[in-house]
Structures are given as structure tokens and as C-alpha cells.
Image 1 (cartoon, rainbow, N blue to C red):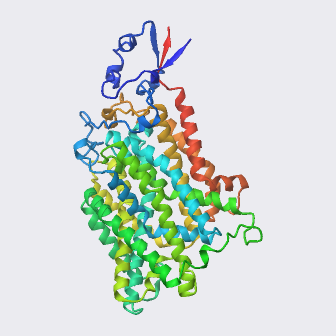
Image 2 (image 1 turned 135 degrees about the vertical axis):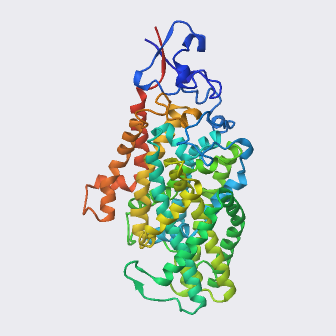
Image 3 (image 1 turned 90 degrees about the horizontal axis):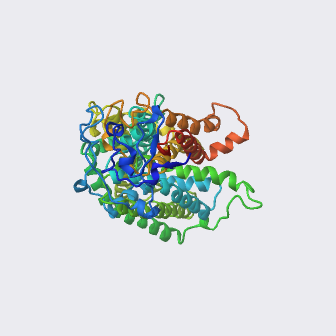
Length: 561
């Protein structure tokens, strides 16, 4: 019996006669496709799956990625799944151009954690060029899922939690959304701590050490440090209160300022040191005779995974931003310009300036806040304070507020708005005590960055396989906002069991390595350590493969009689 997949038939989402479950039963395939003597072979429990449109249809991959946007408002949406913040963004309301998307990424990239990442790689034994190359490769890798994930947001104008409903189910979408939100809350706290430390260090310098005080046992930091942390926290709350438009304006205004300040810091270091110092001439510790001879690959792959994990969060919820892009070309080109190039460039700034500090101060200072606190003069310190605050604000607000706010809206649109979700995110960021997460390079890379990449990699693999491989970039907007048991995305009581099983399959291989990295387990077989060092890649591939396999038998097919 010959089988012809419906994906071979090109249908547009707006005109498909099989648009929803209500029209599926009475329509005969002969009337739809003009083919006689055919019948639909549809497993009863999976009939709600949408007919798959052709992914390329001869137009090619690039044409598919640059296809026109198709936003539309849902008909009769369920009030428990829909509010003004989750409504599809129509063409007339789109405000992100190529420059806006590039500025978004410049604001995200230029920040203390990126600078810190560069220093961490050198501390692990890499030479300056090995560190930059690792960062560049990692960001080129993550650019691929970033652009692909952003496609659906631009095409349909909906945020990440709504898109997750098509894959995990109307109720099941809360699982990946809340996983992403939890990681974002941790990052929000880390960036808020960094911003607070900038205020503390620079004010303490101006006040000649007057802010130094005893550590509070319950917190692990001093009262003055915690006070500066709260000041920076309140500054962010003010931006959250004003909504997504204020975030766009912040990124757009800050991008050129951050580029100028970063270039100025590099120029200052070069002039003061008479060059970039010894770090750019020091060999890698992995060469023959070095302290870590023969251990390069054991370090490279965890570092690469950490760099991918660095933006694995945004690679999931980038639709939260690309839904405002005016076209696919704007989101694709803007991201390609802003992410890998500026990430590598700012990494060089971090490495070169750190190198110069060996000559200027007699020791390597990889923490930019401590470095800026050593620069004399009221003017330079004030300028440094503005620069660090801007850099931290632009990264934190965009990367770590939008996702958890939208996840909470998805949990209960009646209860949460974007503003309320953002405020709760800010509160959780304090409760996580972020200063404990970045106490060491080892903990920052192996526990935090790689640990959460093990959670988010599988989600990314499942969603891309579903959207590009199974649904061929076609979604039913009405069904995304419906609790009807006949809806395409209701699956089993609102959960897509195949997606949840695939998620577990992608996470489980990384659990032993994670437990060792946190100290909860003393040792594990070497294979699990190797798997954990490549957590994002393993989780992405395994989860995507398992989901594709489990979903294969549930495809809508057309067969001969």
C-alpha cells in the first residue's frame, strides 16, 4: 500500500480546508486534493494533529526562512489562555527593524558576565586566541537555533509560551515555560548582583572605603553591599513597570554608548600599559610542557557547551522579541550581526584589558568592576558607573525579565499581566541569593552554565523538530488559544506525552554529571562526565530524536484504498 504524506501537498495556513478539527470530519480528501480513490489513514487518538504544509515546496530553505509574516487574531479565544500581552502582534504594530534587533544583541552582549566569561577561559588555561575562537564557535552554533526559533515568533506574532502550546500541549506548555523562567530568575539575580556591586565598588572608592563593613552571616555579604543590590534592583523595577516599549528604547539608546565606552576602556588600557601586556603573548597551558599539556579537548568541549549555554535561554524565548520584527529578514540579519560578531569582539576587549592590568597594576584583574574602581578621578569613576549600570541593565531586562514574565502570564492570563509577572521575577531574583552562584569560575561554568543548558537544550531540540520537521512552519492560531478537547493542541488532557517523554530522555543522561559537579555525588562513570561536558548538544539531539521517533507514527497520512 503506497503512502503519500500530506506534507507533499502545499497548503497555506489561511486557506487550508483542514484548518481545525471541526472541519476535518465532513471533508472528503477527494474534494480537497482532486485525487480519486484515496482514503485517510488516521490513528483515532491522534486525529487532532494538523495537516502538515510543505516545508520547502521547491522554494528552498532560505526562501522558507524569509517567507512573509502571517499574523492573525484568534477567533473566540479562551479567556484563560489569552490577554492583551499574549495577543498576536499584527503587522502594523511591529517595531523591530534590523537595527533594533542588532541593538538588542549589542545591549545583551556588552556586559560584565561576557567579560567574566573571557577571564574564566584564560583561567582554565586557554591562550587569548583560543578563548576568542571558543566564544565565536559557541555563538555561531547557538545562532542557528536562535534564528530558527525566532522564525515562528516573527511569522505568527506570538511569544514563546504560546508557541510551546503547539508542541507540549495547552497545559503542558507550562513545563518548558517555567523551566526557562526559573533559569531567567537566576540570571536576573546574578545581573542585579553585578549591577549592585558596581554601585558599591565605585561609591566606596569615592568615599575612600567608608562603605566597607562586616559580613552578615545570614546573607554572606555586608549590609552596604545588600543595600546597593537593592538600589539597582529598584532601578530595574522602574523599567519593568513601563513595559516592552521602554525596553526597546533602552536597548536602542544604550547600544552606541556601550560600544563607545568599551572602545574607550580598550584605548585607556593600551595607552596606560604601552600595549596589551603579556597575556596576549603567553602560550596556552595545553601545549607540550605546559601545566595542562594534552588536556585541551577536555577543557574545550565544556567551555564550548558553556558558551552555547550562555545564550541557550534566549534561543528558546527569542520569539518574545522577534514577534515585534517587521519581517523575517529583519530578525535573521539583525541577530546574525549582533550576536556572534559583537560577542567575539567584546571577549577580545575583556582579554586584552585584563592582560594590560598585569603591566598597569602588577596583577591580572579579570573583574571589570574591581578594575574600574582602581581608576583615579571623580569623572572616570562616574563614567564607569554609568557604563556598567547601562551594560547590566540592557542585558538583564531583555534577557531575564521578558521570559519569566510571559511564563507567568501563560500560567494564568487572568491573574498575571507582563507587569505583574516581571515584578514577581524581580522578587524571586532576590530570594535566590545570586552572589552564591558566581563565587568561582568552576562553579560559574560547570555548575550554572552547563547545568541549565542540560535542561534547555532538550526543549530547543523538541520545538525545532516539531515546528520545522513535523508542522513545516504551519500553526493553527485558533487552536493555540483553545481549551476544546477537539483542539489540535489539546493532545491528552492538555499534555503532549511524546514531548514530555522526549524532554525526560534528553535530560536524564546529564543528571549523573550534574550531581558530580555540584558535589552531591562523589564520582560517576567517565562516560557520564563526558556527556555532561556536552550537555546542551546531547540533550538537544537525544530529545529531538526521541520526539521525532515517538511522533512518527502519529503523522496524518493519505493512502491508497
